[in-house]
Length: 475
Ligand SMILES: Cc1cc2nc3c(=O)[nH]c(=O)nc-3n(C[C@H](O)[C@H](O)[C@H](O)COP(=O)(O)OP(=O)(O)OC[C@H]3O[C@@H](n4cnc5c(N)ncnc54)[C@H](O)[C@@H]3O)c2cc1C
Image (cartoon, rainbow, N blue to C red; front, side, top):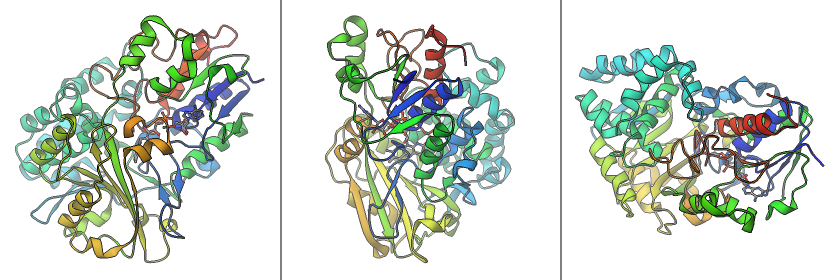
């Protein structure tokens, strides 16, 4: 019997297990799938020789994470490969707005908004590490209140509100809108600006790298480090009831509220249960992975310098597309997030050939096939793209959930990340990771700070377990 059991080996489950092992606990990590990693895995989805990341590819948040960034991941096989530019945002005039590592170089592509861009990001980049520490955390008195209030004044706003008041031109507005759309919120919603600022800031502060060989390498490096600390990892073990778990100490669950309800059965009652039942999931995604016979032929050639490409044109167009999804519909011209890792990591495809993936947002649980709509958006900015497709894999929101039960209805963030649920996820209580069941904690992205491969939900949940476990010393 272990000192602590963690169920689920997504980045948060792995981080929780490592934090517990670092504190001297004998940890057992149980994973339902055959591979560790959850949203950080790779698989041969198309043709022999092509490596695809089933979920995450861009690991800005892993580098920004105060916990993951300090782990010996390189020694365990993880190598961050930085594209020359983090992001390209092509426009219909044949140019692309480029988000570069440098604030100044980015600003220089924004015409009359150059100074406004420097004013927004310059001061934050200087203190990015401190800001990430405050932002990737549960609600608590900030360690850097002045910095956080400077960030907060812009961050609490809607993305369109900030973009239209701070910038005059379409280029800067589109750039911020595309980054904010990662939130899967309406761009008219409060705090949607926060996601745009944090993502663009991370591009300047740490970059948007991919993992050489695929994201599985990052998950494997975390699992390798866990084993080196004495932890054990068991895959192919889908836990169906908390009663099946043997632990001398805490149990940490890298699952979302709906699964917690199922795992706990009638042991969870009252207000907490009702709050979990009311927990709101966000929109889903429809994802394509391609094996390509060549690099994507972007009209704006500079887009080939970027790992990530945002396809959606102007801020107004992105705003309309995301609003359609928020309102329960589908956009004919959806905002598309595309990643082209093989341009920078040759291990992902046979020589001269390439991989790419793209997804768009859809209503939660949508079964609509968005293949044509996504590929039309790529073709719009890269005519001839379709001729390069050697094979494709498509996943609607049900398939996304089938591959990972945490992606309920295709929601990849473990729940809606709007203002009302961002820091009080899954239930408003002083320690959001704790549950009314003694020794049982949630550690997934359904707890603060939410979605992304940063491991901080796992870290903070482990801290809570170590603090309140009685038997356990402080981390
Ligand atoms: C297509 C896609 C693209 C993405 N792109 C990025 C990106 O580029 N960068 C980024 O930072 N983030 C990205 N994300 C989001 C990121 O992957 C998630 O936010 C992150 O993985 C959440 O981590 P987690 O540990 O909370 O949960 P998950 O990674 O979802 O892991 C949960 C794990 O728990 C296991 N599990 C669940 N229930 C049980 C059970 N009962 N018994 C045993 N095991 C169980 C699951 O099998 C899974 O392995 C993307 C997600 C998707 C789907």
